[in-house]
Amino acid sequence: MQTRQLGKNGPQLSAIGFGAWAIGGPWQFGWGKVDDSESVNAIHAAIDNGINWIDTAAVYGFGHSEEVVGKALKGMKEKVFVATKCGLVNDGRGSVINNLQPESIRKEIEASLRRLGTDCIDLYQIHKPDPNVPIEISWEVMLRLKEEGKVKYIGVSNYDSFMMGKCIETAHVQSLQPPYSLIKREVDENILPYCAKNEIGVVVYSPMQAGLLSGTFDMQKVAEDDWRRNNPYFSEPKLSSALSLVEKFIPIAAKQNKTVGQLAIAWTLKNPAVTSAIVGARNAEQVKQNVDASNYIMSDDEYLHVINLAKEFGL
Image (tube, rainbow, N blue to C red):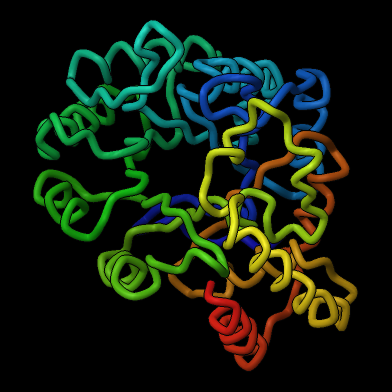
């Protein structure tokens, strides 16, 4: 598996990272029921197939994802780079709220360290901006955690260029984690160029648009409590447009004996600002399919062609 450097003086990450959102199990933004043993096997399959890093978050399953990751990596933590996030917490009634108050961040990291079974997190990221806390306040805490040796690198997720600029006034932002896919390209115009200019690594999430661009998506198989049932991309008219677009992608991917999902992942990795694509998996077979996207050779013409197809479908 190809590796790329994560930001200025950062570590070498595999071009595809294991996304641990879905293995968190049922919660407000869950993907339905999961089998923890299958999740552990999926993580082991990822490592065996060249993936050297995992992305999780304290909020995924309200801690369950981190627990599963910790269990899977027992005895092999030195082999795998682990990223997790803070700033989204349980309000006590099962709903997610923002909280980037310093005391909350400190409480979160101690819980994450315990669940992951480690004394230092490789990459600690702010999950989402908190409108009630000044950017400088929360970022200062992140810097202190790094100085205290609780984390190696600090980054942000879902931040824009202005927000990252405010962070940089205090300390370098090692990485940004934005949503990015063939049909969600908003970061292309300003945010990705900003990251490239400022040596900020980029680890994109949902390159297959939460499965919509996988080539195998079936709304009938989506669990009743799956968060996607309340997401506009999985409602009309976007749902039909995206599925029609996928049909156009099938023969393109087939020329390289690849799937549409692999094409979608490879498209995000074609952008030179992108360090790695975070791709979720619930079992070992899904992991192997994801890994095969890393050797998809996409030409400049193909890259532009699939964008133009997406625009034709209003996506």
